[in-house]
Picture 1: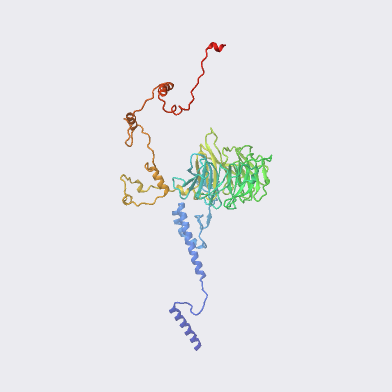
Picture 2: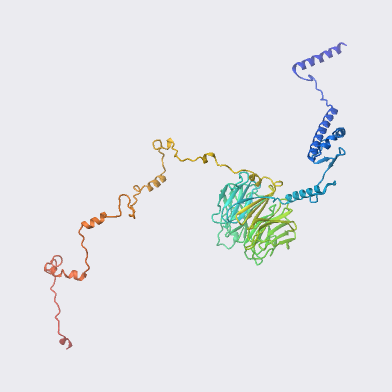
Length: 613
């Protein structure tokens, strides 16, 4: 008993010490105990309250507040059986009980699992069709950007979709920032990187920090995001017959594109019959030279080129309408795949685009066709779409972000009414939808950005159209449409009639600053005294004390000075009149030679009779 009492005393002392010091379980360790039943009951009540709240909100939205108010007592009794997480918002409760019944909507048909009224069916059908249309074609709204007056021949969006660059036949490249623009829709920078050469192709690199520019010159250029030139391809020596021995192109570059896997590598094609790969940040930029040949083995120019999505293949189209594909790893002596006469000879194939998987590709020809090809059976096209007018050598085609649709633009021929159209096809080139994208003008470029889900077109009238859906599209043109135009500051509106003079602007307080020698010479040049500028002739009005009427100094001197006027007389007579005077009074020549000169002896004259004898 004593030991037990001593043990209890120790426990009480420990509890007292723990109470004083603020510790629990002082001197020993014990496991935490949980009341599972209370926790489960608390969770059940929380879920029950949240489910009732959602069901009440749903009833208010459906207009059945009064009906559900009468049955609130029954729901309270039946809600005790609901255990677990809250019911999702997409579910509804029937008025007969507490069981959840999901309402499913079939897109395109408008038929639900339950029988509904005819009006509700019609509205659901229209809503479903509208949602399905906006999901496939984000073209419900549009914004117009004005580049200039000449055709927009090049478009490019960075991978993030924040900036747009456009190029035109007017030699300018304009930069557009969707986040920085307001509703005025103005570009923030304009550069002319290629002088007086039209811009034919623009493309952002995979990192978005560089822009590849191809123009009418033989040199492609690389710009940074601010428009400064980073690199320029060298020009080749045009007097060398073998194009592999030149350092660059010798004719106009028609197309240029970045390698989708290697950051600084890009591809160009030219009228000199070669495709060349380059590295932007190497001293010797040229990497490989690929020569294109026609069916007779002669050199022929290339109109467009493209990398596959995984950069394993390089495709090009020549002026004969042939399609040629090489492996990017080589060899480049002959193309791995080739189709002769893929498009009509003499027309310019404007675009080639690969799909993911490298099995399918599409080509846009100058013969008004769009063709789908399968690399596994490359001799004939899988399908062909005709009647798509193409008047520009850079008319574009491409896939949608999910690659279920194919889109391209059409040109407007002279004398036709309407405008350029955007035409959509499925993967079998069956036309699914088309609409007029530009009134009285052609559609040249079309760009479908995967992140923004927006379509951007470049037209022949110098304008760009951005098509988007308010529900399905993100950022891009939606950022700048809602912004108001920037207002002018209040200071600009205040009229300043009187001149404002600051103390330090007066000559008394002005400090002399050392001028450079060049500025000093320019200033002295304007001073007529220091530059010793001669006086200009007097015009109709006098200047500087000089008059135009009356006598001048020269005329006064002529009057006061005796000037002998030369009369009109014979010079021989003028000399002979002094002959007698000189013979009587010799002065210069005769006295000097008088003593030494022989006497002249003249021949005597004979009569004419003596001469006859």
